[in-house]
Image (cartoon, rainbow, N blue to C red; front, side):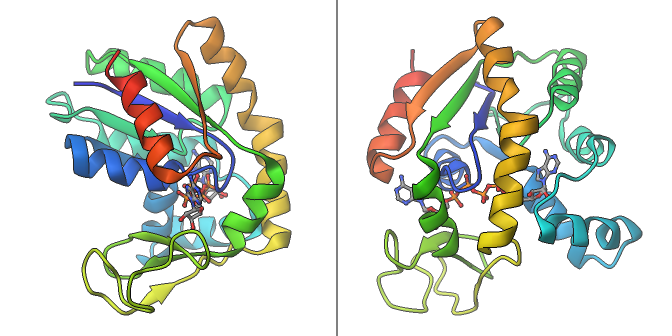
Length: 216
Ligand code: AP5
């Protein structure tokens, strides 16, 4: 079992690679972005609170996201290990995750930074869409479905684009990344847990580089 964090700015490929690891290794993806998007459609008070924050590209408060992760982590732990996707995003969240893992008696095996070029991110984000049924991630140019409008994975035809995938919201998301999240690169490097992978490579090459980190 291996527990990892995928770290990187918006569009770095965290979700794409996490889904591959789930399929190939039976790992469990814990994406705070997906959890928050689920919460906002549930009609709860918390969902209403986070919707506007997310659409503008700001970070949701630490207490909310740490609470969401805490609910998912179990003492039995995931057989293939956890992939933390988009969490932690602040030093406070990183400390909270360390405490939660210690509480369930699990190690954090690696923190993998997907390093990318900021200009490439813009192109990736504005071209992204997902299957509304199974969540498979596509891109207009880099990764279209084999049959236009039909999901390769489940055959669903309801494709969705995210409300925060606009150039304006992306600028705010990138600012949040460089201000609040990028210090985690140094934090985990100093702890001896950081590995870096070229996130600009082809998807299969990124997967191969991740596999190398996981298997050493
Ligand atoms: P979240 O959902 O986590 O979004 P994000 O971090 O901005 O990351 P993305 O999902 O946009 O990108 P990704 O790295 O997963 O890239 P993907 O694989 O899709 O968070 C959304 C919001 O929720 C935040 O702004 C915040 O408000 C809130 N939030 C979430 N977590 C929080 C937390 N912990 N604390 C506070 N607030 C939180 O790929 C992108 C595109 O590129 C796709 O179209 C894909 O097909 C394509 N692509 C991927 N890899 C490649 C490749 N190698 N080559 C070419 N194209 C590629």
